[in-house]
Image (cartoon, rainbow, N blue to C red; front, top):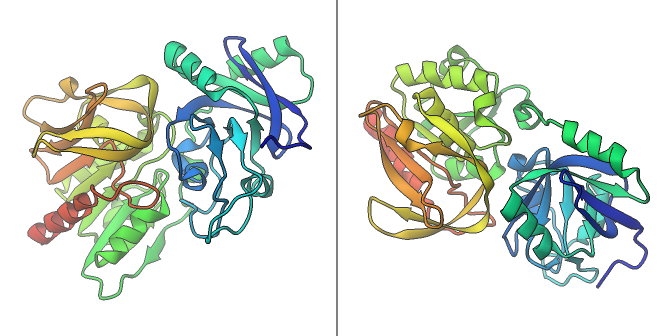
Amino acid sequence: MILENSKKASLVLADGTVFEGKSLGAEGKVIGEVVFTTSMVGYQETLTDPAYCGQIIVQTFPLIGNYGVNSADDAAAYNAAAGYVVRECCEDPSNFRCEGKLEDYLVKNGTVGLCDIDTRSLTRVIREKGVMNGAIVCGDFDKEALLKEINAFDAGCVTAKVSVKEKQSFAAENGKYNVAVLDLGMKNELKDQLLKRGCNVTVMPCGATAEQVLAESPDGVIISGGPGDPAADTAAIETVKALIEKKLPIYAVCKGHQVLAVANGAKITKLKYGHRGASQPVKSLENGKTYITAQNTGYAVEFDTMPAGAAELTHINGNDKVCEGIRYLNIPAFSTQFSPDTSGSPHDTGYLYDRFIKMMEENK
């Protein structure tokens, strides 16, 4: 059902392509990097995933909002997405957990959106030409002036926008281990999974120094996921380099996986249109199994640039064969391009948290 009272709105891409539709959510203008996700559900988790900061999200699945929204499914405490694009937004959601409509949720959170466009056609443009900047604008607009704004847009390093501003501590019931999380854009689920496994968690700002992290006397360190170009997080990279020298157990996920690789001397590359969605196939080279994973990244580690003898490849993407997991040979550390979180995604990679726990146990 198309929202009857919505005003005219458009998505304008940096190459001049225009998709005309209807306004969804908050009205206004927003500029960001246009990316697509293949997830069929979990739209609330998607909107609140810090890794989408500075991006306009396109849902490839044609009907969004059919089970509404609730107060429990946010991946973080805020909407990170710059904008939101769907083909059709459901006006009459039905679910026993439903507390409201997606449209009202977007308005409440100030998220500018667009509906009633051919999102499959838009996705083909992104797949063929690669991710590019774009703008959602309500009403009429000066196309040439807007294109100048779009092409001049640079989100820059946005990590500080989604990281905690000062350290936060969380105590587990019968906590056995102390874990420091370097917050590059952490989702709540990461913290919750650690607490369930008996880890006291201290979340550190992205700009924390190694000395500040070590002052918490951690048994291990998690480097979280987050938005933007990992190579631009120079402060985090320097902190990780210093932590590596201390031989502390480290598990790095998503963007953290890339930051850890850079800190160990590897290079990263920007993917043409990224891996985004809850159905990304990943093959384990350790056991031969293929896992269905949740991912949200626009970058990948060039494993061949890793210094010789420093690490081994443990996982590859089932579609394009890029690096998805690394085990380091000179330090007690490993990393995965995907998130092992269990909220809004498959549950079969949760064993990676247990591997990290075992690593801390063996290091005590």
